[in-house]
Image (cartoon, rainbow, N blue to C red):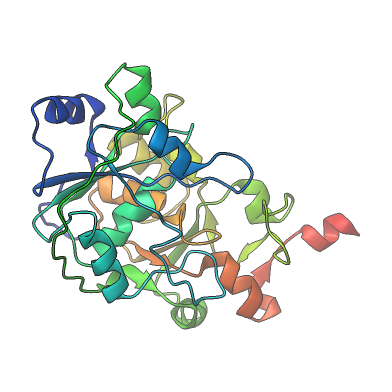
Amino acid sequence: MVHQVLYRALVSTKWLAETVRAGRLGPGLRVLDASWYSPGTREARKEYLERHVPGASFFDIEECKDKSSPYEMMLPSEAVFADYVGRLGISNDTHVVVYDGDQLGSFYAPRVWWMFRVFGHRTVSVLNGGFRNWLKEGHPVTSEPSRPEPAVFKATLDRSLLKTYEQVLENLQSKRFQLVDSRSQGRYLGTEPEPDAVGLDPGHIRGSTNMPFMDFLTEDGLEKSPEMLRAMFEDKKVDLAKPLIATCRKGVTACHIALAAYLCGKPDVAIYDGSWSEWFRRAPPETRVSQWNDRKA
């Protein structure tokens, strides 16, 4: 395991509320609402405009992605990311705090946390408990959109935190990395459909282990303690001293695995960005494991 001083991956609602109250938001500290919801359920930008943490900007993950990719949420280029976050007032010296409004307490925020890290930005944290707990605890909200002064951000892709289809395919032979899938057990096994998906059967990459991301959170929507997280990895026989790739459907909830491992002192989990969305469409059939066709038979 890498022994280094890690930047705090989580900040509390109490800390952020005190920081907002003291007027410390600005070029040195920016807050982002990174909410995203399935089409036809909730409208993330509309909810942001109605109420958000004072001073927070809306991070639109649909805008900050590779729009030319046939897959769902692939990383944008360095230039696109740098321009996008620079327009949100974020420089390389900014501490970024990310939250979302999901009822689980956290859903998309760890993806944006990882995006900053994969583009070389160390000082980024997730709001522990998310907007759900911010509201529950009675902290202030506003409908006033933030208008941060644009800043210059230089993005440098850290390829060690990112895995491609070809690298994961090669890993099936070399087995240099452990592979962990963060989707629900039913989607991993292929007994439940992939939600809102056309032409995408459920199932998993051969040799991967299942650790549903919801299990990393308490019923109150907070991240479980490092001790509890370590025990979960041990229970699944995932060795945090060895290399690890996280996957899911589109590279979003896989970032919960990266965050959980980071909280256990392991900052080097790589994300397979294309995840099952890409694997199902490109990989040889014998590398895809699913009970879906058995179920339909």
